[in-house]
Image (tube, rainbow, N blue to C red; front, side, top):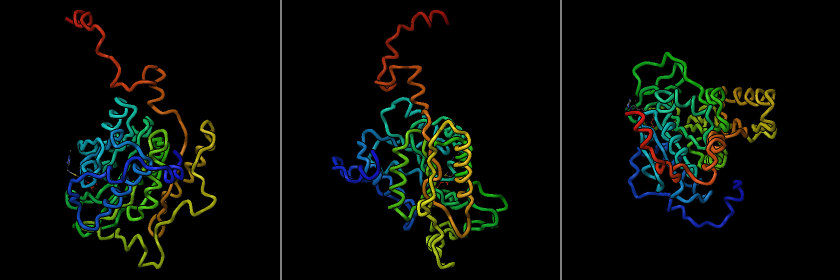
Length: 319
Ligand SMILES: Cc1ncc(C[n+]2csc(CCOP(=O)(O)OP(=O)(O)O)c2C)c(N)n1
């Protein structure tokens, strides 16, 4: 459902139904609160029945997210949210699958899965809580921390370059790529609604403040208190910005749109772009699978009578 229609439609499920009673044990002031609340509000706005949602996380502070959302959920292993989410969607294509995790989880130990999930285009959403540090293990530099930075939790400044998640996602083939800011919940909800609505793998990187370990990328820094203007720049404030590929068969158009997204993703320091960077409609993995297994169009894999086949001859052959 389009965003405006979703917001206006009558609501069957209350916002409260997307919240659990589990105590949220993130540190006071953590940006994760803004991301959690945005996910709950986006699911509420879209009115996706809670029993039709699967939240899948890796390990880290961000990995606790499924505990706080009253849907199906799985807190998996470090870096493994995406392959588990892929399995969940393929097993039950009627689920809305949302994978979540930290930047260490997704761009460090899970980097291989990050790349390969981009090229598959399974219909699911991946949200990364990007705080520049390994929050849960007390603030070591994560893959996104830029060279030369030294947070208060590090003994020395980083001598490695940081990765650019948007550039990685463009190269990997994600079909919807966006970035938000944890403390701008209104914009974040809108981006999440668009990401979940997208058919294919949508990837949303979220700048997240970690007030305990990252004393450089603070809310005051994002607000630009030292330079007298906000560092966050909204891409859609520019009337010329159009991230949507109109002709998915046109390599020229794809390269042009990816080029613009790449340029925007390299804005650093005093200007940080947020919004939708890139979007293209391409066949999803699930749709292509349903061509090979037509029964999947009407029934999820979990409902197919796969095991009613007589397997005795197969075993006899192997004996
Ligand atoms: C295989 C494995 N290696 C290392 C760890 C230790 N570990 C737990 S969380 C974490 C990093 C968390 O950082 P990030 O993914 O950025 O999430 P955040 O805590 O900042 O949300 C690490 C290295 C682990 N749990 N499993």
